[in-house]
Length: 162
Image (cartoon, rainbow, N blue to C red; front, side, top):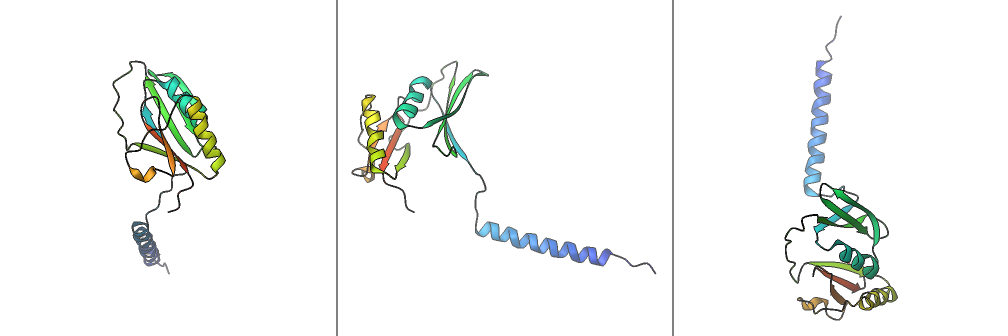
């Protein structure tokens, strides 16, 4: 006597489908990101000075670079854990670039007041001086600087606690 496995297969597919739908509903309710790194990239026409500002002044580590890639040079900088990167690219034609606003900010948090003071001193020794923030929130907690392209960087004396 030959038995059909179709009913068991159908039951299995039904259970699997129900399980997947349940998981999808859970994902929609609690979205999470599975990425393990992020990089923010922006163009510059002054890659050498921008690189010097972020490496020597801010203290970011050079993670990599490239040159002559289809007309582009690039520089990747990051925090010591290398999970968070900044990338600066420069095209051989030095194209017009967007102007930053006073609220385009990169905020770097320092958990050690001495390291915060040293970062400020490095920038000031390079002849970069604090600029007034547009938003008064930053006053008294941080210092704000403009990089060679006039993009703003906030050195925050403390850590962000959501």
